[in-house]
Image 1 (tube, one colour):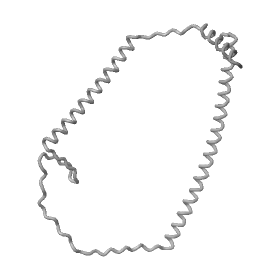
Image 2 (tube, helix red, strand yellow; image 1 turned 60 degrees about the vertical axis):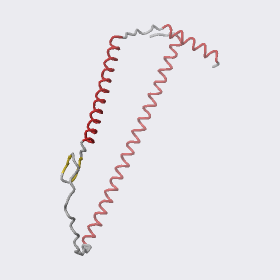
Image 3 (spheres, rainbow, N blue to C red; image 1 turned 90 degrees about the horizontal axis):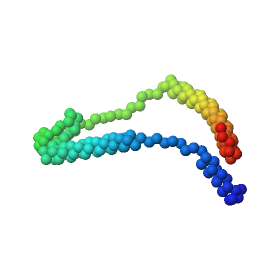
Image 4 (tube, rainbow, N blue to C red; image 1 turned 45 degrees about the horizontal axis):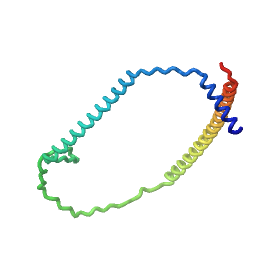
Length: 177
């Protein structure tokens, strides 16, 4: 198809589209302006709240600095004081010079314990094999479903292309429903 034929087809398509009636559009400007005003007032209200919250936080921090508040968290709880914390006048406890002998003794392992461990390992290995086989079967089912789905999608796309071609041909011929 050369440029002239393509241009002629575009012109023909334009004429066909111009022949169609334009849809009617109804816009309620009052409602649009009211909605815009409502959204704007909500936005201003949010900003006002944020400014008040920031001012309250700044005032709290300033008050804490002026009053020299001390906030302490420890194992006994939370302590809030507005003066210098008292220094503890307790004397440190001297370390005790006792020696503690610790022996690391492993418990004895019996033949029964070893057999139990072997049985557990075998049971776990069998469980892993069973789970692996289930996983493979599930993957095969999913692959089959995916192939069926892909075929359905391809059929759907082909039908859509066929419908589009039919409508294009009808428009070119000037047919209407």
